[in-house]
Image 1: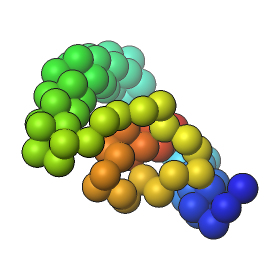
Image 2: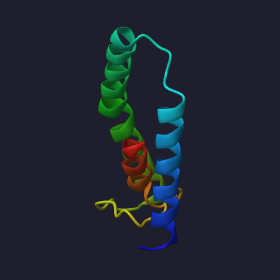
Image 3: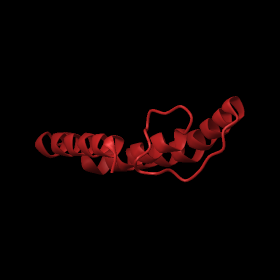
Length: 87
């Protein structure tokens, strides 16, 4: 595992600890359905549109993301969405 993979693990561990120590005060019944609906809308509309625009603008091909790739690379936007999915 390279440095990028270790940084990703650290970010996920910090996010996990923050959510364990300070849980969300929202009503779980209402917020669950709201966030679930927003996630489906975002995944269904935004990700394919952003990927098509980026492929057209940069002339890059997309491949299956690798855990050790940098999520901040503008050449491979799928890596960012893969990492954001773990968050």
